[in-house]
Length: 496
Image (cartoon, rainbow, N blue to C red; front, side):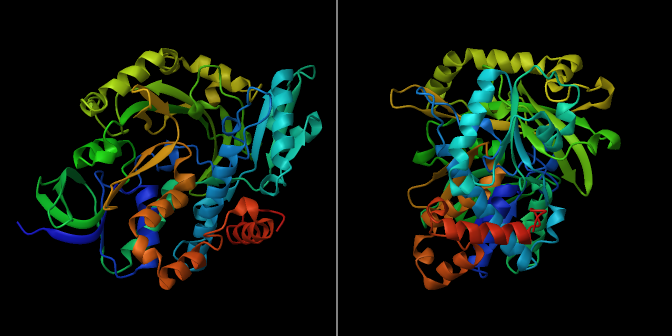
């Protein structure tokens, strides 16, 4: 059987693979790229609009990105990292809009002010300290803070309806926060790739095996799920961007760098409201504080969602426990992922995170009434019948070995790359698609070092991402210039 050949094989047709594909095609249009997707459409798993919150994660409102240190100060390390990474995404999307590779921005990104809202004196003191710490830096200089009920009512009317005046509360806002339909964005990027020469998309194709050949190429066998036909593909470079499905594929690859990794699957659910008279009263993403014992991904928030021009409200997430790695996966995924290399770390994490496991199980067993009760903290006048439950996508958190030989549960994302740079995989969840461009740039930097050193690649990268090679947090003038451009091109700042 004659194998198909490619320079680049992208496994998974989600936000990560599509971003890497477009980046590489912009850098070298002659690259032959094949994208393989196990489902029959693009962006149907975690990338799909209803399978995530659609928050353009910039650390403006997510309180879990700014934990309080033991001395009472605010740890801003993660906030600055995420904000810088999202600025890179905004620059890349702006470039693609200007090049007409993406359509009118409102088709995939819209303004949704990013707000934090807390109640109780201790939480108010924390939010005030967070605001003072972040807003003193140029990256967060536009953040607003208030404890005034009327000011906050102007930002989030539903949240303030019939709220007890005696209760201490506070809020922050960044007016140019965003709601992103990552499913639409991904489909537009794949559509653009489809118009380029030497790009093929194979949907309903499942990776059966992948193995490194003596000539340095990868041989990947993919099966057509419709007719069971097996197609061998040889590729110089393979990217495993299959969301929760990336871990089993990484294990199949056999690369040393992937040994010892395990996965902890978490499901999610949302309450959704589509009643126009309610939806029109809320135009923001309002984040609170996570309950004690909840994973960072479970920070509660009441969101404006805009998909295909239609507005709705979303509240959650409500976490749940499952053994699936993908929404369209198998209940055997977790069991099949266990091997001699990761069983130690996985057992260690299981033993040390029983509170988390119990929390996830209790969340999944909640009644509609109890979920609405949680929503009532954000919307005091909520009516149960106005909200329906929607099942979100699957997330697989990373389990990795720690120096002591046990396991550590990670809630971020991580890129794993083989020693020779011929294979890369992305594991983890939050902040996910918002920082896809930065994550994929790190792969380009490590896997295409020689090409990246050329003037042609450097010039193209700086055209796509003007801040490339710079640290935006250290370049206030460049940050102002870059941010003004992206907010204008993507139409995110109503004051411009």
